[in-house]
View 1 (cartoon, chains in turn green, purple):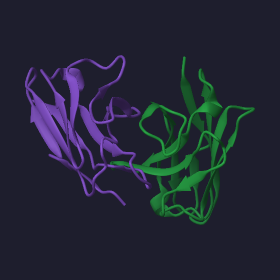
View 2 (cartoon, one colour; view 1 turned 45 degrees about the vertical axis):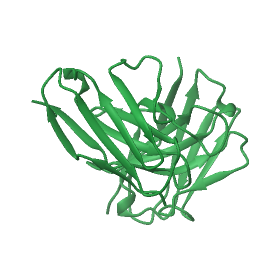
View 3 (cartoon, one colour; view 1 turned 90 degrees about the vertical axis):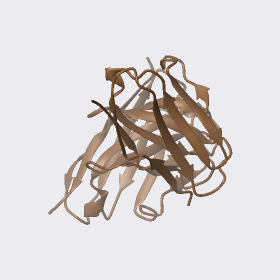
View 4 (cartoon, chains in turn blue, brown; view 1 turned 120 degrees about the vertical axis):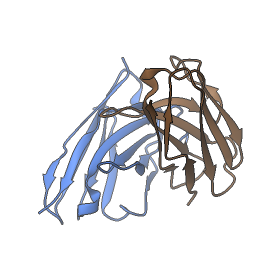
Length: 122
Length: 107
């Protein structure tokens, strides 16, 4: 079964750091582009970051550029999101999502994880 | 940045009715428009990709159309289980963006 499982969320103070993980199974992880998408409580979806299937290119929304870093460990089939200098408005459920193809830019996201909640508050 | 504007924000519908949701892009995105369904406390689910391509396992009552800047998601003969929020998403250019969502509730 194709599956994504996020972990690493929690409560952190403003200015703090957190690393999210997304463990993939059931597909060839290195063959697909992956993204992080977040959803603030009661709000819509916001794309945060992407990682090309080649492993060469990473992409970020302006709202997180310079603070978040996406990476991948293909030996562990895991995608990461290192989040530094966290702000109150980073509070959201963070989903990892798999692209339907391997090229970049991605097209549609056909598999989503269950999400992990990040709360930034003092 | 390509802004996607969905309408309506909320649609209250009786079962078996037809539902039409529109998504307008702020610039030409060709066919690079995808639709998702999100039920409360669940992850989004892909319904339609590239404006009109069906997805395996998605009921045939869901269909999409459009190109350029104007797109439509249609739900024929709404069922109670279709109560959810629907989002459009463009992959034509970075940053990837989503519409604000359309909540479909059952009367």
